[in-house]
View 1 (cartoon, rainbow, N blue to C red):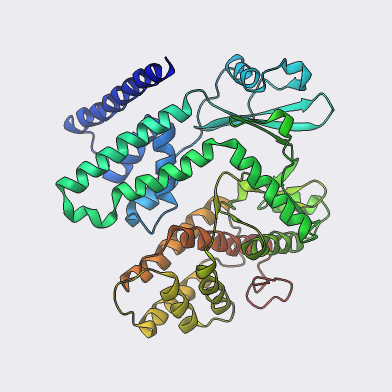
View 2 (cartoon, rainbow, N blue to C red):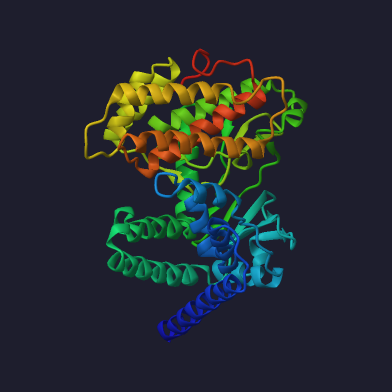
Length: 423
């Protein structure tokens, strides 16, 4: 019965998708013709969860997509209206399989946040701990599977009809998106990521950083109950000062923790934008949201390590040599010319943010993406193609570079002995 029901829902979803696409086409014929990247982004937002996530994938994947699309999809909104609390309450009840008052003494009916896949509510356990509950919205997984199968089939048809486009391996990209999205739907995987990261902090005797504790008795594949953090984003300079901590010390803690995870943890946090790094009221750095993580293959790690070492000492020939080893190429690369192009980009990056100006977090996001796209573009202009993990890794590194401009403009990232980038 459930298979028939899912098939009917799938057919309805494809009908809904075609209706939205049809409406976009009609508007185009009527003369509503914004630039194609913007039209595509607005259409994706109308289509909901899968396409919003696809938009975010495009935004974080300059190795796969043209610059104008990567730039436009930075604006892809993943803030959706919250579902009524009775719906959320029923999902929690169904998942736990026992009365809510046996687990929670209270749940705030007003959502703290609502995105395409899940929404978050503050709560308190019967044992007294303050928590947040991340609740997967109903039907999300079925919609994702239907949409991704539809996209995969469409990509295969396009590749057959237009073989010249097949170099982008569109169906391969859809498969990669499917893998990452279905992982995001499995809160058991996110819970495991949190536990692994907490164990890494414990094993490295790091008491200045933390990640939320998972309450397994109140967590399943579709709900995740975690310790609630109270604090401010890493970029909120005034509030950080209010916690009687040196902002520079706080930033060094965050960077050293992240760099240590590259070699001593199973994965690295692959989305360290300001909203996912908190400074807690007790001064510790809180890493939150482990839905997106990256893993570096051992044979790639040495090249990445050499790349970071080369950046630290301003060795552009070394950077170029490491990029050639990280990238995938079918021809010979002129390392000297690549090094010259990187030197020009680095000069531009270094002068991008005057130290005497206030620097906004959203501007940091824009600059990070522009620099990353430029770096990837330089590599690709020399015949290199980078794995997505490398783009994710460099993006986090560039986020931290921007935070230095906000919190510690006098600090030299590459010479400061307090930073242990490769240990």
